[in-house]
Amino acid sequence: MKLLSLAFALILWFFVMGEQKQEISYAVPLILKNVPAGQMVANEVPSQVDVRISGPRTLLMNLQPKDISIAVDLKGLEPGLSSFKRLEERFNLPSALKVTRLSPSFVDVKLERIKTKKVPVKTVISGIPAEGFKFETIRFKPTEVAIEGAESELKDVSQVETDPIDIEGVQDNFTLIVPINYRGKYTTLKEDKTVEVQVAISRLPEPELPAEAKETSVPKSGAAR
Image 1 (cartoon, rainbow, N blue to C red):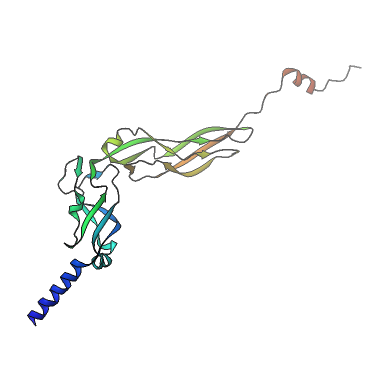
Image 2 (cartoon, rainbow, N blue to C red):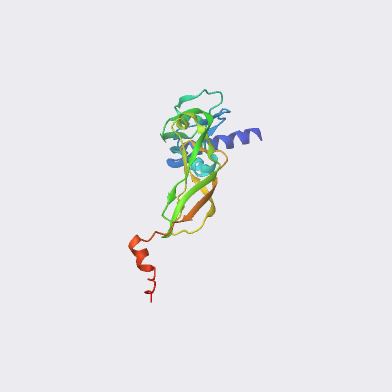
C-alpha cells in the first residue's frame, strides 16, 4: 500500500509539473494589521494590489481570489513613514505557483499620532427676511466642538462652519438643528455633529411721514362766524 501511494503521488507530481502553465490576474486585498494604539494611517494606501500568478492550470483553477491576501504588519512602528517592499514574498502560495507581476510592488505607510483639538463654530446665514423685517441675532450651542485625527492636519483647522441657515422670506423667530459642515481627510468631528440655532427676526419700524405730509393730513378748522 505504501509503494502504491508513493507511485500515485509521483504520477500526480509528474502530471502537475508537466501540465501546461498559465497566468491569471487577481485583484488581491491589501490588509493593514496591528496599527499601534494612539496612532493612525495618514496617507493614501491602496486597498488592493493587482497580481499575476503563473503555474500549472490545475492549481490555478483551484486558487480562489478570496483565499489570497497580503497583510502588512504595523506592530511596534513609531510615527513616521515606513516603506514595505517585496510584497510578493508575503503571499502564501503553493510552491508550484509563482508571482510574475505585482502592482504596486511596494507600499508606503505614514503613521501619525491621534490628537484632539477644540475649535469654534461659525454659523452661515443664507438669504434675507421678508420685506419689512430684518435679521436681528443668532444664538447657537455648542459654540465649539472637538476635532479628532491626524496631528498634522489638526494644525490647519481653526474653525468649522454649519450648513447654510436659510432665512429667505422669514418673518418670525425660529429654532433649528443644523449639521456642521466638516469633512476632514484624516480628521473628523469627535462628538457634536450638529448645533441648535435660535434665530431672532424683528419687524422694521414704520417709516415716518414727511412734515408736509403731516400738515396736509390734518383737517383745517372751520372759519369763525
